Image (cartoon, rainbow, N blue to C red; front, side, top):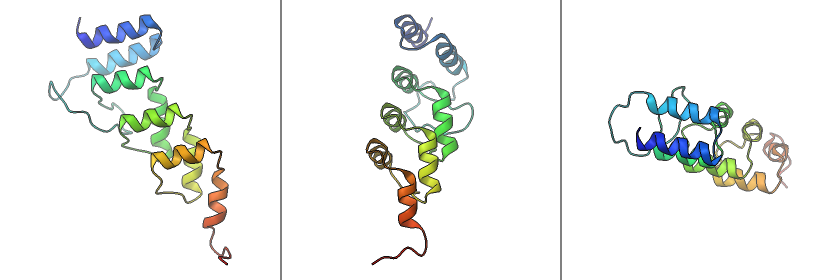
Amino acid sequence: MTTATRKVLDMLIQGTIDADQAEELLGVMAEPVASARRPSRPAGDRVGLRLTVEELVELASNGVDADYVKSLAGAGLRNLPVSEIVELAANGVEADYVRDLLKAGLEDLTVEEIVELSGNGVDPKLGESFLRPGRNDE
C-alpha cells in the first residue's frame, strides 16, 4: 500500500472524507502519471484533472469535492490554484454567485474580490446597475 493510499484511508477513518470521496481520490491516484514527481500546478476544469497527492489531500481535508470544482469551472472560474478553490469554498462562495457576477459584467474580479463581495452580501445586480449603459454618471 502506498503512502498516498494510506493517507486517503486515514482521512476516511477520521471522517474527513466520505466513502465516495475516498473512492474518487483513489481512482484519480490510480491513473497513470506522466512523471513520478510533478510540481503543484493549477486545477482546471477538464475531466480527468490531474492533481498532486498534496493537492488532493488539501481539497478533501477542506471539504472540497469534484462537483464543486466543476461547478466553479462551469461558472467561468477555470485554472484556479487549489488554494483559491479552497478559499472560495471556505467562504461559502457558490458557483451561481460567481455566474451572476459575471453575468452582471463584473468579469475581471480576483478570488479575493469575489470572496469580499460575497462575504459582505453584495448582490450581483447592484454591480449590473452600475455598469448598465446609459447610466447617468453625474
